[in-house]
Picture 1: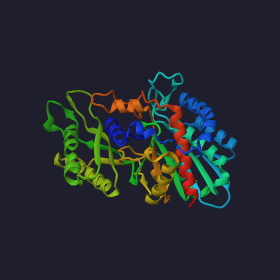
Picture 2: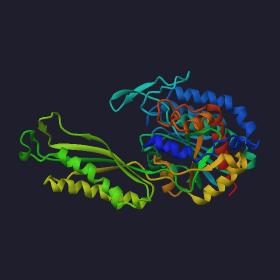
Picture 3: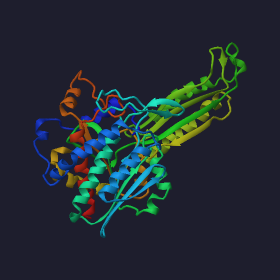
Picture 4: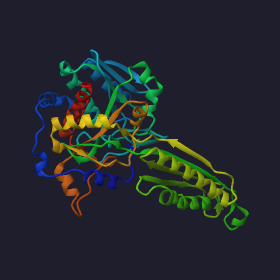
Length: 438
């Protein structure tokens, strides 16, 4: 999950949860407890193994093979190498809807600093250099919950009819994994699902599920602009066209698209995170490259920002008499839009199963997620959050001057495994069963 402004993001989500003793007074209904408790030791072993052996995007060969073996052992018909390293596991149980449940396979190019006994020490090549690799976004929790959900649903197969379509998707972090699976015939080689579900960890207290109708993540567009100039000596700028000056104008001017053209009540961000140009202080270069990210929830806001960035870049170059810049938008994915009917039905089932206080409406996040690819392929879907943090630590972090809570993509992000995985299994199993009843 691509996560800008993480501290603010974490606080806004955490603030939505009522972290009081009363919130934990209601116990989950016992229908799933015994099944999940019985399988948890195996799920914990799987989780710790995956956590200690993370793999980068499109290189998840060990991870994919492990998930494929687990699903075959449960009784699923498994196809590997879909969209690269993707896994598709099908379980047919008579006539009924087809339900897709997605987990991600990949980890992040970063060092883990949790100090856990099962912490990752793995290193791998990333963009031509060696890097540490860590499951600091919680995909390992997702995978353990995914396997646990499959086991639970098969154990309860006398209670539902239909087809389970469990997919292990590569490259969510780098982007492109969902597109790769779809391009490899995900909905042609296999049944197109009637509904789809995915969960994601967040640093809210364990025992809670967060949901919302409509946009729940942002769209993400990568931005790269090459401003062209005419190089020369730093002492004679009049003999040059300075692309660094052009880039500087653009960086400030483009923010007026956000502050003066976009509806102030709608979310939208244009961030320039990298400027590269020149080699020495006395040389004006002939080009400068800017890279950034553009985020929004609504398609019309996304289009306004993209058009505004494009227009401002061209205008910045034109003011300096420079050639037209090269502008490239890398599509990082659209916002995930949760289907209202699916959410309402699922939330009712979750509240019945888990307890009303445990199921909380949350604000949308500014991170992006390529689960949107399945939504935009025409599958009514629900993406929801599962808390993974110790409730007391969460409560303390929200106090004035409280210690910041480690969040997704932090090197110190360390979900509490047992309650997090158990809630993931219970919540996802309940979601699938609610869809199977329709």
